[in-house]
Image 1 (cartoon, rainbow, N blue to C red):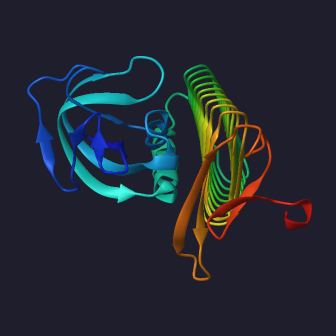
Image 2: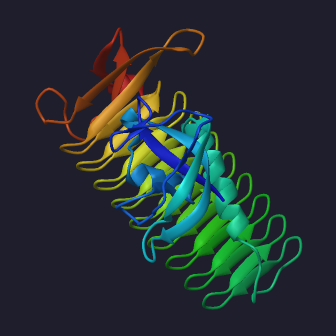
Image 3: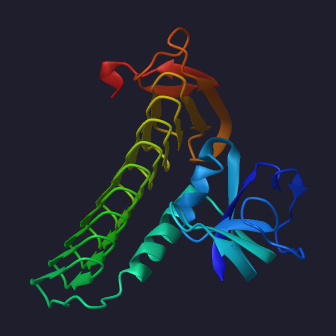
Length: 297
């Protein structure tokens, strides 16, 4: 089965060295103890490897032995093949596709163009172009172009271009280009280019180019080129160009770009309230983090 795995920057995980294109096998797989671990939901990889100093790959798993029964989508398998590397934008797109694939109508109703659909507990709902969809507890919702989608606790929501998506606690939300996505505590949110994404405490948020991403306490936020990323206390905020900010104890990371948009360096710091202020926007110039003044915003 397809899954996603995070690594340290040198492609190690818990002391084991991996290589792209290689296949690895162990005779035993026990969740969090033995075997090879990965996540079915791409953004769940942020729970184990923060965007600031990690790399991510698509992987194939065989002989899946165990998976988390509650919480995220972590899996354990005997065999893993390391596929292509994905940047933050790639993880964002993969997450959107993952959520969208989960939003297949079951016992709910499907509505046509400019209509709406609603499903009850554990149900699903799908609406056509410019429509809206809402699903109950543990349900899923998908809306078409310029539509909106909302899912209950532990549900998932996906909306098309210019749409919006909101999911409850531990849920996930993905919105298309120029869309917005919001997920509850421990949830995840991904938005397309020029979109925005917000996740609650311990959650993760990723936004595309020129988008914005915000995560609560101990969460992580990643934004694409010239975007903005903000994280709460003890969280992580990173972006490629643009600006970052964080609460006390947060890690902020920003890549400096040249005139052609190529990365020429990376600056990182911990928000200590002295050298780096809390809840204050920073950018990078000539390799140094500098405060963004009001007139720069």
